[in-house]
Image (cartoon, rainbow, N blue to C red; front, top):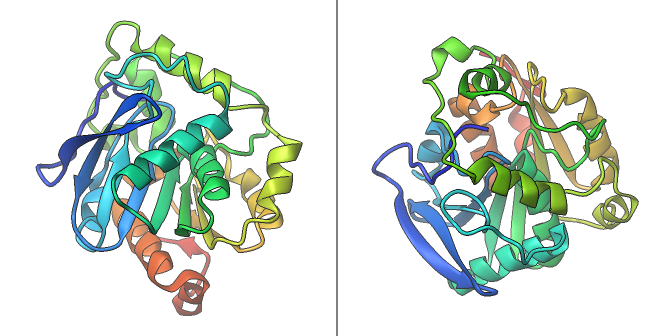
Length: 271
């Protein structure tokens, strides 16, 4: 809910493109090592210091979902399964045969759907304030950049102002999200998730007003290999509010999966 174009947090990330299912898909890439594919939220690609830190250990690939940012409107993907399949094909067309996955908010449902498609290729999944399961069908926070910044962050004054969207970008993105997102609770989707054996870490900010952490227990109940982590003093943009904490716990989970919990004193990341 911030800006409309692909924006890198530093010179570490290079912009590239890949073809998949008739789309020319943009992505940002930095680092080396095991691939970590990142799917953004409903606002578009927004990278934080957490991505910089993770790129010190992984090949971080932040994909712009076709229909977001500067790409043409996506009138092809009619549902989430089709969109997820396209993104899995994009990863395959990068020559990647095995990877870790991370999804933010809207990207949480996208990455869970990708995991159902590519379950034999995905080693682990990290969800940041995922919107796959929602208590209501409320739209994303409305208003200008200032209102959206207040909704995203626990301490908005600590973050730079958010650029305004380009003409037509917000409408284009909302149309795609509305078409593919599905209902707040999707019985068929949740039934499929019960069979997903991939290790999953679901992180929620304690101050999140967009995707309240009360939904966290539902993920733990549905996903057979899911672990929860509450990030103290973080709102919806959990990676921007607490980048070091998110990068640390995500990296530890990717390396150790459920064994990482042995070293944690609590399921709450404090200051």
